[in-house]
Amino acid sequence: MRIASPLLAVCAALAGGVVTAAQRPTFSAVTDVVRVDALVESGGRPVTGLTAADFAVEDAGVAQPIALLPSTAPLSIATVLDVSGSVTDDQLVAIGHGVQAIAGALGPGDRQSVYGFAARPRALDPRTALSVDRVAEALRRSGGAHTALFDALHTAIVRADRGSGGALVIVLTDGQDNGSWLDAQAVIDAAQRHETAICAIGLRDPSLPTPRLAPVAAQAGLRVLTALTERTGGRLVHADRRTALAPLFAAMLHDYRQRYILSFTPTGVARGDGWHPLTVRLRGRRGTVHARSGYWTR
Image 1 (cartoon, rainbow, N blue to C red):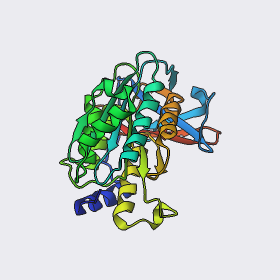
Image 2: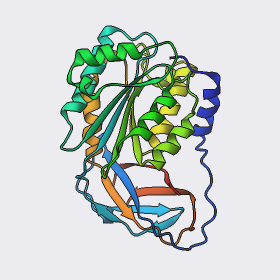
Image 3: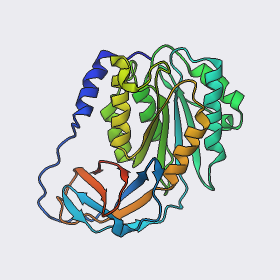
């Protein structure tokens, strides 16, 4: 999973928070309803029991009146698995257990899709998730030397059958890419347009005590995963190839179900197509809010 040199430039741009600037508001009204999924954490655990009054939302710097919607609609969950490089049979089995953990936690009407990728993404037959061995064998056929992370994520996002519920992508990878046609910004744009949160399990070298001591390429991969998750309202957790993956996958889906769905009709912001930066924070409460950084009007 080596990183291509152009990715370093992408990482630097993302780390600096480069986003297409929105035009200065002209304070006319926009009538479309905007939905924002917000996960609130404190001490690594979801915060429950909040109300609309506990949130403050700004659209292009303008405070918005918000409502809280129920989160009972079926979900679309895509699992995107990096099997490039030298993945052992034991690791493939551990990944298979992770896929099964999600399959076992699906609710009525939820939809699960699974992708393995190296040089290109490969969608697994939905029936494959019924067997750990079948997942491992299907992923073995998806492996290879190159890594097209961005292409795989983009495919999973645009192919998802979102329906009326939320859309979640859980990706297992080290964040390095040396084979995609697309870049990280294209993935972020697609996720924001399709209202999809990206959660990542970032793989790291088990011999290193912290990610900061990783080689330059690995640190660049970490920055990519940080940008992908932060700007789409997801989370990033770290693991190595010895970590039991099933609990991590199950916890990500469980935590996503604890999200709050905030809704507002933009008031006092510029009319027309374009990018709208969002700020979501808590009022008088402690906690970290994970929410997408903005939305596009079409």
